[in-house]
Each structure stands twice: as structure tokens, then as C-alpha cells.
Image 1 (tube, rainbow, N blue to C red):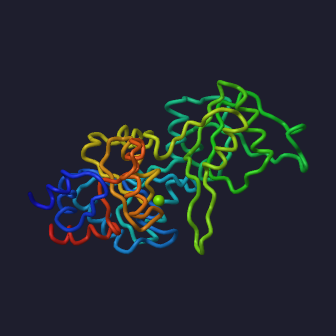
Image 2: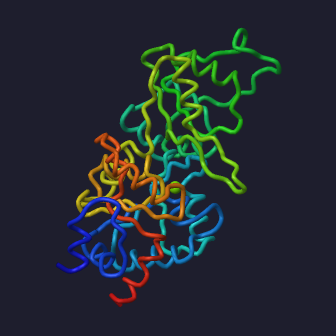
Image 3: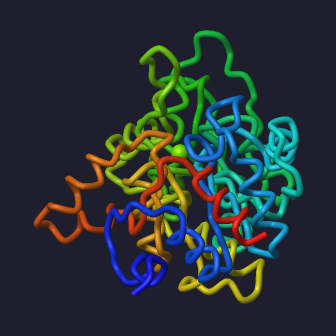
Length: 315
Ligand SMILES: [Mg+2]
């Protein structure tokens, strides 16, 4: 059995390089990448990542970016890709949790009148605007307003929670009141707990705000981003012939990216340039709990630049 066949035949935390990666490149038609920790760190591309993406596109592979980061509209992502040296990435390749939330509200929930109360950021509002989903304008509450005396809108159809660095107790209270109506949908862009920053600092994620609202209302949010399947459904509804068996999900976080891949029936690859480490994956793979196996990647690489030698051999 050659290395390539072994890579496809064996499952679970398999370190791949050289021939095995070449085999994966042959076997897979679509590559889904998480962004932060996989192809870039903030404003810095992971070395070699732009060449990997370019080489995949040049070979006619489907390349999609699936990110739980809801703060930027896709147009801003397109500019970031360009700025960081990625060529050929188009808007339709990018599936962010804010874009997919807007699609959900428009196509699945079919929100028309009434509007969405957004506990979130401008990137979310911009995607809603573009999808034609009405949302409540952020009218400034009178100074010192409280939940006892602030204005509440009638007929709110959904509460959408995401990253919100202007989060206040009053917003939490208002959202809780809107969600008293069982017909008012409760959506979250993602349930990420936190994100790494420099110098050991962390940025609390949308999951914290969603959790606060879940406690206040006794309800559970419908989560749009990874690990929920909805982002993959967005991809497969827009691109014909996207077959889960021919897709590889590449990510840096076991609990979101690998679980997402597993939920969607995709093979998964952990890259060690981000949050999760090999030891974390191995610990999950040793777990007796079957649910933990969904966090275990099929393949592991140090960085997606490990794809590069395989491309060179194919050229
Ligand atoms: Mg990541």
C-alpha cells in the first residue's frame, strides 16, 4: 500500500506529508478553510498560504472560506485577501457567519416586515442590508434610559446575536423582552467562547453574549456558524456538485472546525498554526465518549504550507 492510500484508508490524527498530501489533492475536489489561525493571523498571512490557495484555484479546485468571524462584510474580506497577497479569491468563495445569518433570515425564516433586533456589529447589519432583511435601527436610547422606561419596538421577528463590543445591560434586557414572544426567532452567528489575541490576552466571543441571553430567556439560540451544518448548506445550495465525500475541511479549532466537518460528513484536517494542538486532538481520540470522536481530525499538518511540495511535484 503506498502512502497515499494509507492516508485515505486510516482515520484519526494522522500526520500527513508528501505523498499523502498529494493523494488528498487528487482525491478532493473542494477545500474548505477556516481563516484565522489557518490562512492568516490577524493581519499576517500564514507563510505559504497565499500560494496554496492560488495553486488550488489554478487546478480548478473548489475553494471556500468558512469563518465564524461576523465582524466583516464579505466585501471587506475580499480586500483583506488581496492585501495579504491572496489572488483569485472572490466574494462568492467567502461564507461568514454574518452572511449566512442574513441568508437564514431571508430564505429559511423568511423575515419580511417587523425587523430583526441585532445584538452585534456593523458587519452583521451590512450583510442584513444587502440581503434585504429589515432590522431595527440603533436609535440611541435617551441618556440614562433603563429597561423600566426605554422604548420597545412592536413586532420584532428575530433577535440576532454576534460579536458586539458595544454590548450593554440595556441591550441584553431589550433582547430578553423581545424573546418573550415565542414567535420571535433567537439566532446566534456563532457560539465561539473566545479568540486569542497577542500577549496572552483573549477576546470574548459571541458565545458569551448568546449564553447571557439564553440564561435570561430559558431559550436556546439557533447557531448559524460552525459547527452547525448551515454554512455547508449555504455552499452546496450556491455551488452545484459539492459532494461532502469530495470535500476537505481545514481548520485550527477542534471544537468548531473539526466538529463542523464531522457534522457535514467531510474529511477533516487540523493545522497546528492556531488554537488547538496535537495533544488536544490525541486526548479527544483516546476518549471513551463517542461524542468526543467528532472533534478528532482525520489528518494533521503543521501548517497548510505543507501542501506546497505536493503542488511542486504535480507541476
Ligand atoms: Mg480559526
